[in-house]
Image (cartoon, rainbow, N blue to C red; front, side, top):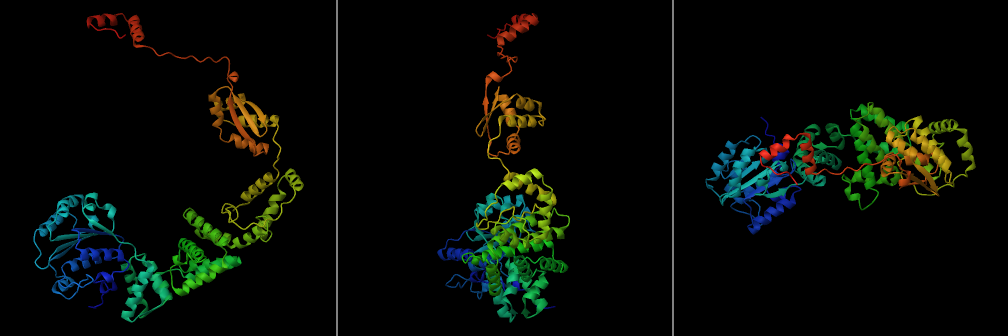
Length: 571
């Protein structure tokens, strides 16, 4: 049998200073030991693989160490430390709550609390995954946890603090462990490489730390796997091959294609990615992260947010200098929309390719916008032919009015990425035609307010489309008047006003048909316009006496019953 020990066990910290990325916890515990402010119950919570159980074991070892250092670290040489390192300590009990979660197990633990430590000052109980205890087990543990003997200390560890009942939380001193930063993991892995005589590239260690997602134990497990694959020399290529990670170079090539508007290159690059077995959704998410990193590199103050080796950071800086911020922001927006709609798309590959094609045209559209040209520029023959087809099929009346309007001067405004510039919605001839027609109508708007007769015709035209009889009647009976840019609508009752206001499309319909977007609408109630034949009858409330008289008139025996029972009628 091999004597190989995994790195997570072989290089497990033996003192607080060796714990990676949890200085706020280790320093607090050391200060508590120094000032003799030690609690009787601790709760260590945080993600997996960040050092909760390790810190619990170190604390338990420190409490019974016979030769503490000046820095309040365990000596690892006394009989207590050696017995603990050899898993032979009777004063330290470790319990896995995932498999010992019943009331009987907790009662057995409480029974052990009654006995004083045989050697040392304290008896420590470490309960891992404490959130797995049942409700009955928690309740059985409450009294002992609140008032334990002076020699008993409980250290609880969990990954899901929200599952622990509040009565347990209130009895513990809580320490929140955070995810370990990538740079801290890289430094720890590099230290292991130095001890094991392993030559590792910084970019390779960065990929391992990034793949671990803040868990050092996962990083060490991946490290062992890579060492088994590549031996004593760990390269970046070996890591991405073994972990099936998409190479950074692909993303750099894709962004280069955006800068040069090279459609064929970006499609071939994406095809190469798919042939290597990578999922299209992973690619689009990675591309969005890559563009985010380029935006981070645009400013020196945000450069610290970029994590990676020196060579990789330098490569990001070079491409960030060549990439306009407008292009990156628009491409990031397209990536985000592509990711949102990815699950709904039937043809996943075509969906991503369409997004890549849009990103390839960003550079051309930026130049066209800055030069004051229309959105559909002649530089793109396909879009130009589509625009010409739409313009040829618009009405001659619109064309004649457009000729009378002077051309707009070229704009020198800086580019601000508008949503309509690279709009994901413009994917069909019909949508382009609607946009061109809308622009033509905007250009032919009449600045003079419409006449009252034309407004009345449009008003009655809308009334014919209304399905609700009450709303249709209210609209037809309304009296209209024009005051400059204001349409005054007079109605007989407030009910009629509410019926007309329910038609939310009416104001926009009037403005659109009149070609006068500045038209406003005002309502006023005129009682003279109310129908004369309608009389509103106001009902008076009936008193109890009147109800009693009506009952007696209908049935006289009721009054005799009242006299028999000697009751008094209500006043």
